[in-house]
Amino acid sequence: MQVDFNAINAVTKEITITVASEEVSKAWDKYLSKAARKLEVAGFRKGKAPLKLIERVHGDSLQERFLQDRVSDYFTKASEEHEIKYLLFPDVKDVDWEKGSDMIIKIEIEHEPALDFKQLDNLDVPHNPILLDDEVNKYLEELKQQSGVVIDVEKAEPTDLVEVELTLKLPDEDIVKNASFFAGEEPARRALPELIGKGIGDTLETELEGTNIKLVCQDSNVNIDNEESYPVKLMVNSISRMQLPELNDDFAKDMEFDSMQAMRAKIADDMRLANQHKNIDAKNYYIVGKLFEDNQFELPMKTIEYLAHEEAQKYGDSPQLMYIEYQLRMKISQELVEMYILSNLRNKIEITVTDEMRQEYLTHRAILEDHTVEAFKEKYKDEIAAGDFEIGVKNYFILRKLAETANFFVQEPEAEEQEIPEAEIESVEEEQPQAEAAEARPEEAKPEE
Image (cartoon, rainbow, N blue to C red):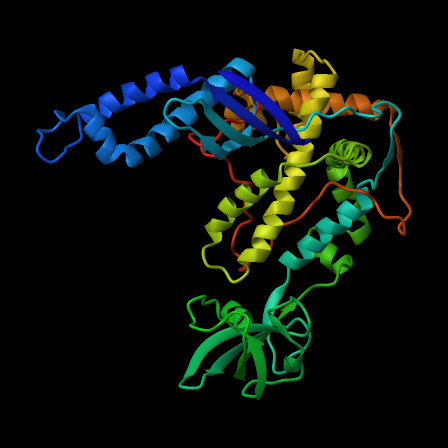
């Protein structure tokens, strides 16, 4: 069996497998004899018809199944002999075989890119540090939101939640649904500026796209076209507003502090260690981003398309399916960029993991999750016992090693940073969880080591 390789691009190869006619003929005769035992031909008992007659009657269907089996077997054998690593399943482009001739199989695979880093030491890395004051402000804002109370109001102002009776006017019927809007411009697809100033019992008429109607009614089964606009009538049933407290001394005293200044100081003290470790992770992330900027490489797009499509199926018939799939492609691309850079760094920089390094990494992870080390070890005992944990330790210390010589600087706001492709998946409904990248099924995929 002869195996030839042709690089299509940095992550795609065409593999041509040529199997000698003698080997294929023997395999075909064996396959035909075995299949004949289960096949029937008119005038003969089951399994007793001559092989030539079996081949003439059932030859086409038998050959199709034979080629499927042999292509899989020959590719598996070639993969073992030539240590072929690939993502997902191989794409069979062509199989050329006639009895008495060689079998020629053309297969396309995608694989991990091999990187030759231009520079690893003394990198100039743009970096936006996570400021402790910002973290404190963020925490206080979350506390403020949690302390808010919902009140009923008579007139709608921007950001108020407005519950309405929505009448969808169709040519042959009117459909009445309960719906929820926000007065104003945000959030997109769920807000109406015309609701500002409206009171309970007021009505308004407008037009909405089918996808917006399904969204505000939380009913994807309404029989309307997603892209078409429809006339609707809205009658306001209720208006509610989130009333938030002021972040002042009174608020702090309610939280059992003497003043807001004292409260901020205590929060900062509690968050200081975690903030330091967040910045360690942030610098690691920015190093990966810098390496991507300096060493641009192609990504396996067929693999990304497949994974995104498979994951998107979890959202069913969502009217935002195309957008969700796009977001998934971005997310998977980001994950692959990081994975490939770290994989190539491990090949480039040898590092022996010690018990002290494992302990330091465990402590780092525990601090980030606000756990004790022992609690963290108990929570993630399966992960720690697996090989991926050791890889995580290596990744952490390799990036820390690069950080020691790197020049981190804050980039000017007007300058554009080159970042790893990044995207958050926006679900159609707020309670729908974010999707994670799909994994290839074992029977269809052979992941790279």
